[in-house]
Amino acid sequence: MLALSRKKGEALMINNDIEITVLDIKGEQVKIGISAPKQVPVYRKEVYLQIQEANKEATNNAAAVKEQLASLFQ
Image 1 (spheres, rainbow, N blue to C red):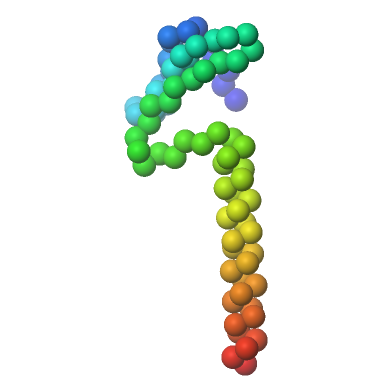
Image 2: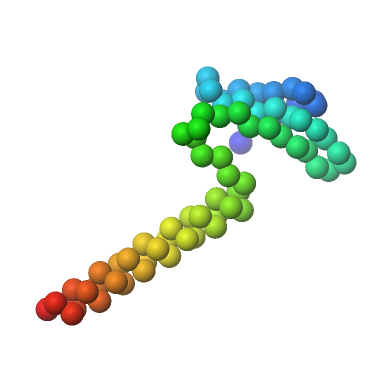
């Protein structure tokens, strides 16, 4: 992990097209802005993990449905 110190208004670049800017700092909370191309998904980590879990469940359910259908037509 790369750890960088930034002050309010300062930014960092990822690749040539993603900019992360420190917008505000209040106590222990930091507000950041992310500027990225539309095709680059940006999620809060907790939302990303929920999406991953939902995708896993959907894959498992699809496999179960496929097995059920296969057993019906045998």
